[in-house]
Length: 116
Image (cartoon, rainbow, N blue to C red; front, side, top):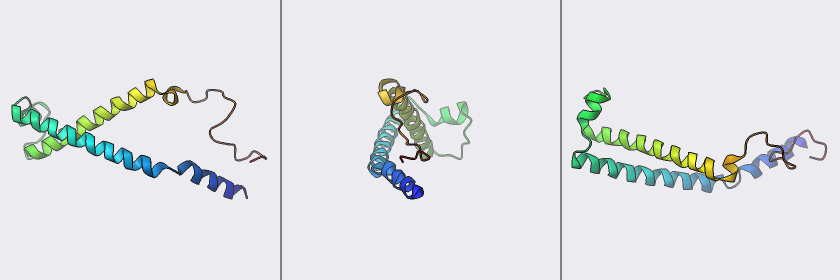
């Protein structure tokens, strides 16, 4: 009986994560597209050249410009989403709650509680 209730509780907690996953995938796709076009613009204007990657960052010359643009776009997406995560942590109430903060209600009910 207790295992069934735990399983039902787990299913209830996971409900609605599909929409969040789809939204996160769309967000990452849009971020990657924006970063790729930005890096392409930097390459076209000459602000960023393949020689920077090859000479300064010691990336082998066998990697052509297209792959350099893709790798740079991925780095921009990671950095950008890191700062979005930090902003969420600082501004959101959920992000500011410290683990172990005492409250009257627990987010996860005790499975060993007899009322459970």
